[in-house]
Length: 358
Image 1: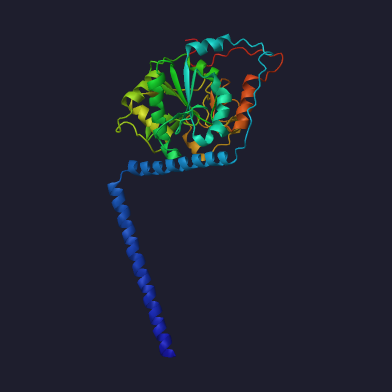
Image 2: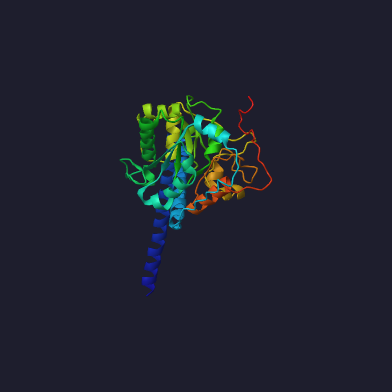
């Protein structure tokens, strides 16, 4: 028995020594690999890797937010409020802008969302666009939608967007001055958009939206896809004329808003400030409550070029867009913006454009 114990102890000690030896070799290998990585990879390479990982995390979070919202959608009947015969609003200024600043809106949707989401966009804010197009992967002549030859899925949003802008250019380039992309859960106040655009020329290579910072990939920043972004005619022309160059523009994959932003930057299209004269935001990638109370995810706080402010003092009185708006809230916003009135108060026009009075 004593001999067996002595042998067992010897085996135990031998095992410990082997373990230490293997651990030592692993440590040496790790330090050698780290040293090699430091020699062969600059800080920019490491930063780029981390930013790519961060972009992937943002894509996953945004997909999850859409999935959660879609799972909780309920069937909603259109709520049509026609009380125009009671209103005595003077809308002559808005009507003049509608004639002079022609906005084409194309809405990103899919066959599965026509009755759940897109129909409510069509029934509410989108009817105020000069031209309205719903872009899908399948043509539906009764809705109607334009079907593009591309698969559904977030991994194909870049390709879908590129093809949609080409379609718009080929069929409508001379019928509008500005070309806006929005989602089927975006709410847009067209009167405020036209007021903002009135000081800019469609012949300038510019586009507007809610600006995000991701400088290692897009030096001038890029605009949120969900909040909607609007291209001038010149920006659209450049995108279509040169956008098929794969060295300048990714044709599919990646994060749609980042890739479109990088593409337009490569084509010389500029991002410009879209805040109002008081520094308040106009384009918003969340619903009004989120911006009002500042209930932001970390990725938004890190990227928002305006500092992720909250409260009524952070949002322009002439706000343009909101995102992640479910159908019920579409009709609520439609009611609050166009129908609810405080008696005895006549709202005068505010001069909130940065170029007003110049």
